[in-house]
View 1 (cartoon, rainbow, N blue to C red):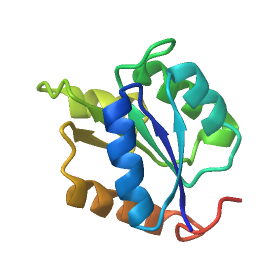
View 2: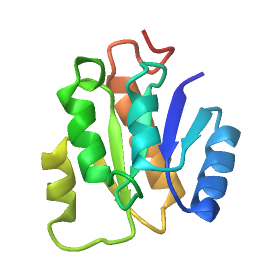
View 3: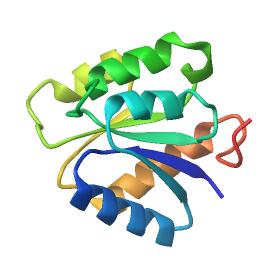
View 4: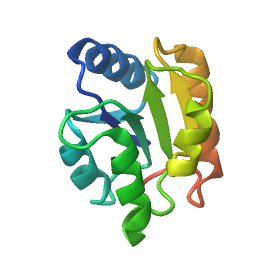
Length: 130
């Protein structure tokens, strides 16, 4: 079962996404701020990270930069999630180190398709983390 780390400070978003992802067969862990999300991401227990970009402690931009600067996080797929969908935000997220970008409110079928594509592209095919 693929393991997803959801880094989201908004309780309603956390609840909705975690429940829906669990129903799709994903094991979901939750971090509520950037500092916690970074620490959890670097443990190597996850197949993918869904990362809100507006977080307390460390924002998502800094979290993904730190994930990418650590050897344990260089190949970990990260999808940026943001309610601030401005022109250039997708490019900014990709330049910061995210693999994909999605705006809020989340289009769940599109998000799941993106998750599945990124997991399928991983060397282990989206199974258990190494």
